[in-house]
Structures are given as structure tokens and as C-alpha cells.
Image (tube, rainbow, N blue to C red; front, top):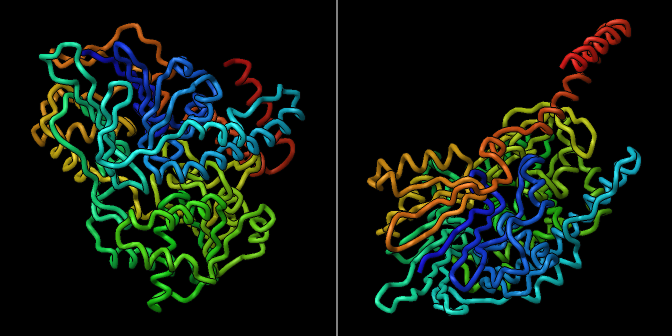
Length: 530
């Protein structure tokens, strides 16, 4: 039996994971994630899906991260009534994560509508609400690892991907109409964790597939292999550097897994006497809830009991309410503030950046991947002025990054994982990566002996017919919502924001009002001529 595969997200970019599979009798999705990054990319979240949600029979979910699950409430809101299959830990995590995401949508739209009302612009609606996020969970069904399930004739098996609690690679067998022909075998990697990660076994799956769809987030990048002790030493050095001279440390951390791992290591450092008992503020209601899910599923994690017990330490200040979060503003030095989101694009970390990073004693420590166009990437790339909630902020603090806490496999680990999936007979698709990362991984795979004609780097909305009998065939005249170049680098919104900051600085630097008026006239003439 042939099938068609449409790359509805995470193709040419890291976020928005969503793949539409059509067979003779079914339409289903693997993942339904939210886009993150530039405003151009994020706009896809508000646009119509490139399919009719009411026609989708079911969804297979790899894991709970919002870039893989965040549009499930929208899918249900617009007509989907099938089941969403996921592991039990993923289901529990989404019980906290999706309502939190809905709340963020509501708050962001409320603030935007205040500005729109003052500017005479039309008001907008959130893509979904907390109530929508709670309602969609009635369609969630939990499955076990490494057990075949039959979904309307399609065989599915979930494998531990080692990325976060409950994360999976998904194996599919689509039956053939011909009893003499083997089933079409496919595998989605999901997000793959690095080897020897705290809490999880190394990623695993079967071998011998017709088609494999593999993430490529860290293509072209390798990390040194470090022990747990060495990793904690790297973290200790960064903390001590940030806190010297009455410093304050901000850590934007993903609420699920990264926060728990960092907290565990900080508390181990304090318990061993290597780090004094500096106050730690966990300013993330979602991370607090996620920690409880970790405790519930402790028996599914490796080497975890002592670490989860440590998370109850009395000197961690758990801040739930907005008022408690704002109270942290009184802390000017000698503390660690952890808050979401990990790319600084939403959540309470933006407030803490705004409140602290204009000071020279502040340090922002990035501990995860920063997508193109995200505030975290802008700061990492050296931006000294940014706009947060409409206000210009001068960045005088230090921006640092460590990659030892990455939840993604690096290039060498991706190569190992792909080798273990061989033979791959007809197609290997490299997704969930920026273009240069996917191209770097392709180059490494070819050097490793994988035939170049087997490897494809798809673009968003590409559609391909998959068969066991011949080469995969791309559909012609497919409508693409974005061009490949729209997925890389800054977009016009980033450029315009930088222009406004530069103009304000240029006007402020001029000697007098006459010079400022002259500059304004030159800009107006340029606009008319352009």
C-alpha cells in the first residue's frame, strides 16, 4: 500500500512539529506542535491548518513539549474528534502544560488588545483558551512503550526516545492490500535525547524500515562527553562567575525536564558543600506542577529517587502567583532565578530580563537550544538593545551559554541512532532542524556511507508519495505557506524593531534639536523616495 506524507511543520525549522499521513482509508497526524521563533513563523499558529481538522482520524504524539503538542487544543476547537495517543507520563505532563499554554495565549492577547484599542486597531481572539486546553484532554489515550497497538488496522509501537519524561519515537506499519506484499514500515524519531542523560536510558528503536523521519536539531554540532560530576562542575563555574561581586543569575529553563535536572544538580552542589546555600527562586507554576509529575513517575526514571527528594529543599522559593513573582523584583543580588520559557519568548523570564539585564551585575545563562528569531537567540548573538512588552531595554548584563544540559542528541549521537535503524530502504528525511543543521547532518551521513539519493531535507508543506515498490515521488504544484528563506534568520519584524532602537539611539546622540529635525527630514525624504 502506498501512503502520502505532508510536512506540515518542523521542516526547515525546529518548531511546529506536525506530519500528515494519508492512506487509502485514513488521515492521521504525528504531532501537532506550535511554531516558535520569528513573528513570521509564529503567525502560522494563527492561520488555518493545511488540512481539515474534522477529517483527521487520530493523532500520534511523540512527547509533551509545546512545539510538538501545543496546537492540539486548536485542532479540537476546529473539529477534530478522534483520539490522541501518547505515553502516560506525556498525558500527565500535558494536563499541566496545555492549560498553561492556553493561559499564556489569553494573557498575551489581553495585553495586545489593550495596545490595539489605544491605536485604533481591531481586537483579536486567542488561538485557544485555558478552557479549550482542558476540554481537548478528553480525547487523550495512554499507551505503553514497546507494545504493538492496532489503531484502525495500522500497527503502532512507541519507543523511549530519551529526550524528556514520556518522550517517544514512533514506529508504524501500514498494511498492504496485497497479502503477498509486506507492510509499509516507517519510523519517526521524535526528539532524541543524548546518551547517558540524567533520568533516562539511551534512545532506542527497531531497525529495517522503508522510511525514517529523523530530527536534525544539532546537526553539525558535537559536544564533549562529560560525566555527571564534570557537568556539575561546568554549572558550578558559571554560577560562581555570575554571583561574584553581588551578582544575580537568571536561568531561562524549559519547565519540563531541564528545570528539574538543573535544580537537582544545583542542590547536589550545595549538599556537597561546593556551592553555598544561595537562594533559588523557581518562578514557574508549570515547572512546579511538572516536578510533581516527575515524582509520580519516578519508577520510570533512572537514578532519580535522591534527586527528586532534593527538590523539596527549604531554600527553594516556589512562586506561584503573579504577586509572588513580582516580589522577586526586590532581590537585586546574590540569588538564582529560574523561570520559563527556555527561549525567552514567553513566560516570566521576560519580566526578569526586563527587570535585571540593564544592570551590569546580572547574568543570563542559556541552557537549551535557541531558535532563530527567538529573544534568546537575539541575546546570544550579542543584541545590546531589545524590546520587551513594547519597552526598549539596554542589555548591560552578561549573556552566557552552556550546552551540557541539552535535551537533544548531538551530531555523533544522531549518526549512531540512524546507523542502528539500518537498513533504511527508500527514504531518510531530515526534519526538525534549521537548514544549515540539516545540511550538516546530511553531509555527515553521506561521509558515513548513506547514499546521498536516500536523504532528503524537506521544506514546510512538501508532500511526497511513499511506496515500497519505487522511489518516493514529490507532488508538484504544492502550496507552501512560507518559502524556505522565510524560515531562516531575522524577519521584517525583527529588522523593524532593530531599526526603531537604532533610530532612538541616533536621535539621542545628536547634539541639539536642529540636528534631530534635520535627521527626521532626511528619513522622511528617504521614505517618500523608497
